[in-house]
Length: 638
Image 1 (cartoon, rainbow, N blue to C red):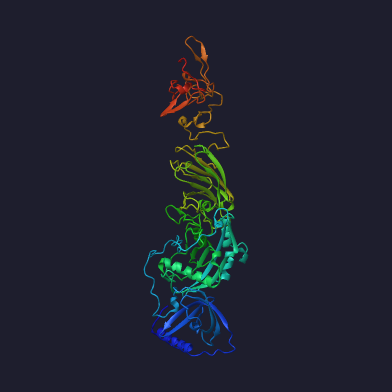
Image 2 (image 1 turned 90 degrees about the vertical axis):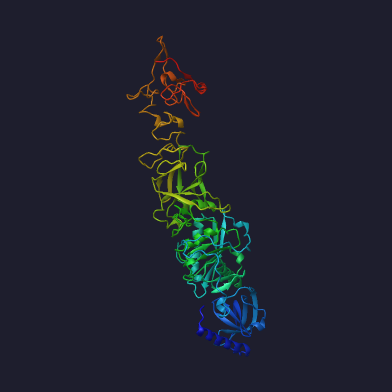
């Protein structure tokens, strides 16, 4: 409010008229109808005269209360009252007959009702959020005042959560609200919507929670407008402003809204979440560059506050949902070092309707994994195949790799397509398999920021080249609007999960639980140290070796299984005809653990000891070579 000499003179003239009205009896026309007003009062002193002014809680109009202090001498600034009396003709004044004190808050002062001499000073500089606007979506504001109680335990997330809220439409000083409760209700609940299938907060919550959140329109109230004064003072004595964005400003607005609700007889204990809608342009301070602010992890408390600095519309539901995510305990979702950069998640910075990502829905208790993979239920180098339903379509929708399956934390693999409230996923986000790393717990245990690692289209593989970390490989076999089929392979050493040079969209190797167990990594190199052999692993086959036929390109040296060599002793007595699979490691014939692992054992003894006398063999000297079911025979030499 601005004051110059002209304004001050006009104010003195008004006060002189008020003084006359107060000192002289007021004759009320017998035809005047008695009225009743409810609102917050300001008691001001001009000279020896104490005047009482009321702000009508319904329309924000201001009334001078004549004879008020005679009826109730203890009135003080900040009191919320119910007044009965007769309006004075041609004046915004009422001759008071009765006053009922509804709420007493003597320590709140409303600066827009005071004279220039009694205006409270502007709030002193305190903790600042900086001189430049923060990112479009801002993290949580300060914690609530300490006097907050625990909400009934039935509100626990996971099995069911009833979302209850009261939304306050605010008038900020001289900036009027641009929406009414009637205009806002269709955006909140289906039963109030005039457009079939149009987005609503009710449907948004129900779908993204997989039906775990109950939204009763009767328990989600919208009221206002609530008049937030230009300046005021909180119950703790701290000043607040309607244009600032300091902590005391934010909580000051919330407390004014609480007073309004109490004045209107609203039981605030019925509503856990409080949403404050700020009219566009009301916050001119550069520190107020945010479009939403949400109190963090307050879902177990009796009060959980969200501030929205945007025009409510179908296109700002994502902002409201983002801040409610903070209320429920979620952190931002990042990508490539940017805290807001995950475009697949409402907790990132991207606009448009979309749900939370897989680790966050799990943290909220709204989804569960198709499978948890760790070292106890997977075989290194062997692929596992999964069908991932679109995340928005099923509460069981992701695969999780636990430590042991990965070497760098916990990973979530999910599939996102533009169905349901994922309808506005970006072009590079839809029909993609998403990989997030998330090492936090549930919202009850404490969450951390999920990190988007990769988005994979059909036939894509991650990582593209063998890496020591994170210790697994993902291949997307196919995608549709409803689901994606993937294969996952964990490895102990890089290259253990074979990937062909040509990407065919099929599982690169044997599938766990479908194909016979194998330790073959299908990298075209025979690696007996990894347990590969010519029977179970094509990497150890030469031409058609192992098919029982000694082909033209096969001989004793390269395929002893198909081309055994009769061995003759010096006395020309045939001792045996060595053949791989006969149960004897015929070392003298060239069999060893590389070319005939069925007969010739291998053992780790700091290094590999290979029974037999082939190219890689160490003879038959180690005891393991003779330990049943193995036998090893050096025999005669050729």
